[in-house]
Each structure stands twice: as C-alpha cells, then as structure tokens.
Image (cartoon, rainbow over all chains, first blue to last red):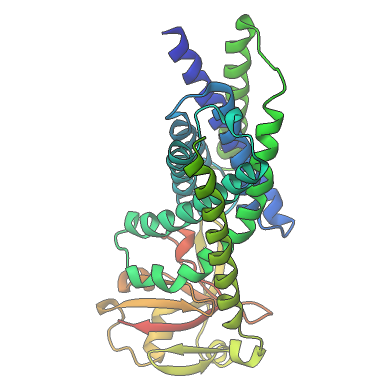
Length: 216
Length: 143
C-alpha cells in the first residue's frame, strides 16, 4: 500500500511538473518565436518521462503522467488549442510507455552503449511526437463530430518532417538524463509526501488560478 | 539489454531520421515563395484575389476564445463564389503546406475569413477547436 501511494504521488508530481512546463514554458517559447512543440516534447517531456522511469522503475507510470499533464494542460489559459494539446500530451505518455516497454530494460542504467542510448532517444522522441501529433489530428476533429482521413494523409509529410528536430533533441536529452540519473539522490521518507504533494499543488494552483483569473 | 535490441534500436533511429529528412525535403519543395500566389484563394473551383473580396464584401467581427476576430463572413464569401446553399454542403479548407480540415455548412455560417500583411489567409470559427482555424489557405473546396 505504501509503495502504491508513493508511486501515485510520483505520477502526480512528475505529471504535474510536465503539465506545468507545457502550460507556462511552452507558450513563452512560442511567443519568443521558437518551435515550442518540438522543444516541449524533445526536451521537457523526455526529461520528466525518463527521470520517472529511472527513479521508480515501474511500468505504467508514464501513462498516468500523461493523463495528469494532459488534464493540467486542458485548463491552461495560454496558448492555442487546449483540447488538441491535452490529447497530444496524454497520447505522448502512452506512446513513451509502449516504446520503452518494448525496447528498453526497466532499469535504464543497464543500457551501457552511448550509441544505444542516443538511438533510443532519437526513436522515442520522434515516435512520441509524431504519434501524439497524428492521434490529436484524429481525435480533435472526432470530438467535434467528424474526421476525414484524407485531411490527415495530406498533412502527413508535414507531421513526419516536424518530428525530425524533436528526434535530434531527444537523441541528446535521453542519454543526458540517464547519465544524470546515476547521481545518488534520495529523498528522506518523511520529506517524500510533503515535497511531492506540495510541488504538485503549486503546479495546479498556479495554472488553475491563472485560468480562473483570466475568466475561465 | 539483449543483443537483438542493441542492433534494432540504432536501426530504428536511422529509419526515423531518414523519414524525417525526406519528408522535410518533400515539404520544402512544395513551399510557395511568390507573394502574388498567396493573394489568390480558390473557392468552389474559381480563383479570387483576397484584396478584391475585401473590397466587395463587408466584414464582421466574431468573438472567439482567442478574442475578437474581424473578417469576411464565410457564408457571404461562399454565396459570392456561387455556392447556392451554404448549409447544404461541407467544405474542405486547404492550406498551401498542405494542411486541411473539413468543416460543416452550419459551422461555416459562423466563421470569418481574414488575412494579414504577409497575405496569410486564415479562417476563424467561434465554436471549433483551433486546429480548424486553418491558416495560409490556398483553397476552400465544396464537397
């Protein structure tokens, strides 16, 4: 029970941090004229997803993180399509989980070769971004009543092209995160829940508070 | 990590890089650089100059979740382009890149057509997700 609660708190904090960065940092990058979607997935999403895998070594966790982050993104008052972004983030968590469950060991420290780590980063980041993009291009029109497959097919080359930069970023982010994960860091038991729940609460209060202040 | 996966992962990474590179080349080859081409929008198989449309049709302002948007009412644009019953059809709005979305006749009644100083022609709808707000429009096809 205690382990399950710890895992749940981990899902909540990592999902909230991911969602918070999507809500606050993503629009700021976009306003600065940077490719925010590529940076958010290739850098932030990959860091949080890989870190959670390193720390907890638990299958299924990244799906939960995607749902938490997607929920937070749904209430975000900044940026463009809330529904699209929320769906894409939830999908990204699921795709990451699928790829890592098939290709990587549960203990990422067992991957020794830097080529394998970089390749895993490239494939995962590209796969997560492109799959999330495609899924949202299907589900968003469906949620408004209709989806036309020819609309997706005509845009597919652009989606596949946009994933290239994400893959390259992921090829650096994931190996770097695995290396940083080797640093011995452990939170004392009595600090675990106050820290994880406190951080999660801050993320949600800031985003929901801004949403309410800007008139929901 | 098994030997099989050690070999598979670099292969997969190379495959997605190649897919990304070739898709980028394909997309870039389709880019339009002539500004005069961007001024033209094809509606119901006929070409219209966006400046001319704004001279002929009166603009209206709609409220969206991204603030007020002023442009040509899409129902009037379609009527001008000889669509006899706007609500009877669905419409595929195609961008140059070539992103496209299909919108019902009912939603088209509420939307507006705008353009900016770079002749980026765009539609806005008050009740649809932003993914339907197609920009850099080349054509509105009547289905």
